[in-house]
Length: 148
Image (cartoon, rainbow, N blue to C red; front, side):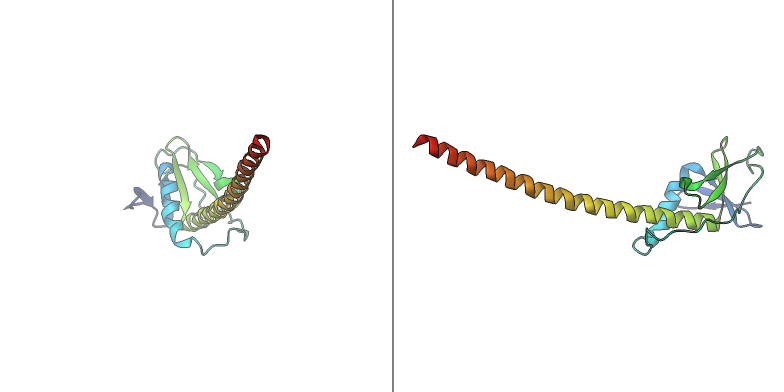
């Protein structure tokens, strides 16, 4: 295993299989950085085919205890090994790439939802303004009617 320093922290990389030992606390930062180049280029609605079972590691390279299997986002697309004790993930570069695409898709969906929310809020605000103006005019007319 070779240590590699990234902007997010230190990763251990296996020369033999191109897998990485990733501290769980660094995963979100790695995915955020890797997905930046994909934003706007990935259709969030195109399905992603599940990856075949790769990078299973029977024992944690750090503590040598057995690793559990996990499913990224419970989407059935990327399954990987995790050491719950050491909080380390055993990921193949292909798994990390697909996870980055999934992260970028999530960002794309969030941006679309936020844009829809902003449009709906603008519409509601316009409606509320109309109602308030209508009440103000009605109050003026009602007051003038009773003052005559």
